[in-house]
Image 1: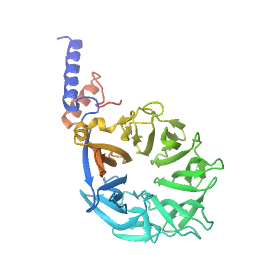
Image 2: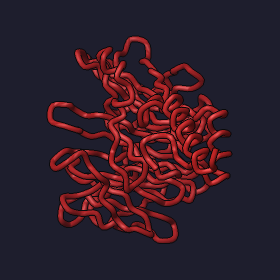
Image 3: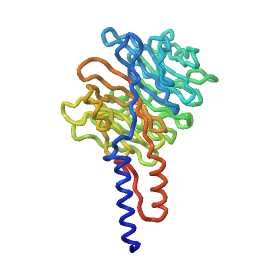
Image 4: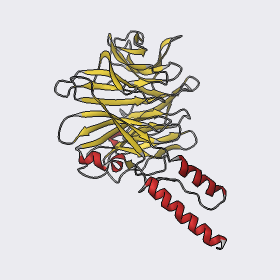
Amino acid sequence: MQISSMKNVITLLLLAAITLFCGPAMAATYTLTDLGTLSGNNATQAWDINSSGQVVGRSYNTASPSYTEFLWSNGSMQSLGVTVTSDCIPGINDSGQVVGDGINGHAFLWTSGSFRDLGTLAGGTASSASGVNNAGQVVGISDTATAGVRHAFIWDAANGMQDLGSLGGLSSARRMNDSGQAVGYYIGSDSKQHAFIWSQATGMQDLGVVANGSKANGINNLGQVVGESAGGFGSFYWSTATGSVNLQTFGPSRRIYAYDINSKGQIVGYGSPAPGTGDRAVLWDNYTSAPIDLNSLFPDLIASGWILSEATGINDNGQITGWMRQTSGSALHAFVLTPVPLPPALLLFGSGLAGLGIFRRRCGKHS
């Protein structure tokens, strides 16, 4: 057999193997874990996931909302034993430290069952924490001594709570990376929300994403930021190299929100793919790609009466968390999606052929 014919046969065999193991594009890419709810509740909303796959969020009963913060770890969900506000967006770091609000109306840091009241900015009465990095630095929002004025803060054990200030009125910090960069938004003199990035060296900087307003929701350890435009009719990616870039949507006037980004550049959020579909959890494989409705990977879930509604967190292993909703009821369940690796035998086979310069292809929808 001639070498060129042999190459064609091997290529066809590999294509068949890829189809066998991977199926259609992006099929069987994730396993779905339903985190359930705490006893007596019918709703859980997951807000953050760390590198170990631990998840934090809120649990409540939709009939009489009273929000309790939960931690899901090693296959089980536990209440942290504190009632949080409906606006609380909990965070977790890789050590399993959790932040939120509800201790005397103040932000807290929870470590292995022990709560630390983080207090407020000078003169304030209430605060809420939403992000914590691996150094134990915490960010959030707090009242100030001026009535009605709330500012973003950073807290650490050595310095306590410090005011990040504002470039206008109210400011709020959402998440923080391990380099000490924080993101959030402030209200400008134009009465619109403005996405910002903050660091100790530069202070607060406007990301320049204005239009009808914007909020920065997530930042990775490379300093890449994602967020949303006011009204949700667009989302953005920002880095020092690219500036602000509009993320692709499902089409004109289809709202979409970007919540989190990992260090591989994968972005999660939620959007409305078509009229009448409601909110669907989405994934952008990178800031230049089109959004994927994650429900397209789970037809059996939809058939059972559930929809992946919002994706709110993604770790560097590609695990995604968020919540799904019951299509014919009021139940909400937190979930975790875990990537399924390519079978080792196929990886070895493919890498061997690639080394010969015969065939090279990534399994999945994106390349």
